[in-house]
Length: 523
Image (cartoon, rainbow, N blue to C red; front, side, top):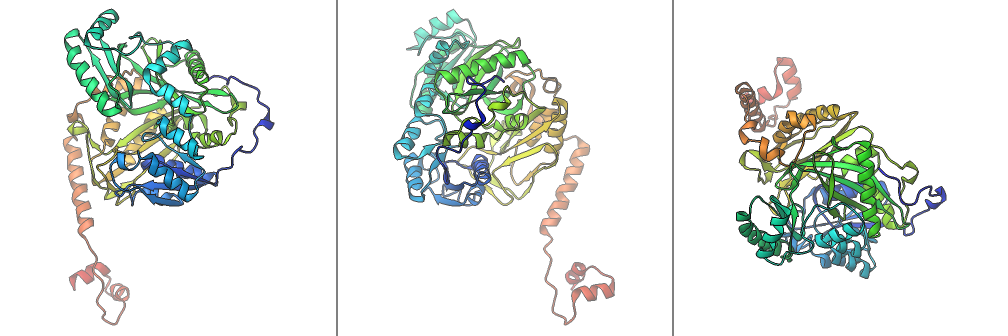
């Protein structure tokens, strides 16, 4: 973790916020909306939730001080409707909007609309979002900032013929990527020239549908890659700092599943180098707020710029656990005009080890097919070093309309072996009944020798996991059946009210030495 560009900032510079915030609208749903509402309450700021029709009973609605409906259910009609959200902000008198992650969090037009409406957008400027949101512009910005890049096309690839020529120069395998892509969408690995025509057509169409921009570019595919990202922060006073790295290599279809901090690959020297590179890029775009510079690294520790996410990351809890910082608090303070609160602690070094598992409503035995349904039982683990960021409750109906992320289970340990052991215990104690989840998959992953040894690459799940690996052993199956029978009995056992016989049922039971319920049931 590197020192900020401006160091030795006098304590007097930590003045009161330039803009006092009294009410913040949270333009999101699920666990991140709950997370932001908690932070606002801790800071003494009123929170405002928005919700779709199907989310009217969602946890984030009850955790906010005020809540207002967004007509409809589809994301395009609700959480992606910046005009509706701004109208609610104006009507309820919100000073600012926190976008969370996803939805409008990296929408430069929405950030600009907030500015035009006089509502503070808790995030970077629209200009910084636009500059880093387009992958081709981001690559050019990184190149000018002397950030190492994966060899690739100098700009958008115009057609298949040009793609074939560039891929031949780069050497296969290559990655086709959408210029406006993100979130693991709009990218495809191509192993040989014969695959390129089909991949080019499919990726172009996917980019057109998902991002309304069919432009593609090519990069050389790094063999056995690791995905390592650096958390950066900038303020309005010209300070830029790196808060260390996160290892996000365990992915499925380019979607992160397990994250940890620090990375088993990264040495103190490599951490300093990656941090310096990331803050240089943040400074190049005058970045303000929380952001993440993502790198792809080979097994030797050579790293190359991948993209910059101009928002809070899903996996931010692992950074909070090893730094002791609250990144949402920091976002709000920085947006209000305060300098970074940790300047006198730089350079920060990670304390201990943190691991996070994303808990999804999905079925690992059926190719991770998303699941929906009612949560009939929920038991969330607690204890030393265990953190829960969930957006659900017992009785909650998981809808089909949105991402199936139920929550995040994160743990902290003195070292990586202790963190793995603690995560295994926490997963064992986590019970979500009523729909399929990936909890058993995470427990499987924690036991894999390659994971425990830190020998990671992005192909780990595709190469190692088979659905039948989650099948219980015969002895375990017997215990599961017995537990299921007992649970069914408990659910069906409805006590009857005692008949009015003129005497207390408890007194009659005591005299007879019998159980009250048994007596009534027999009657």
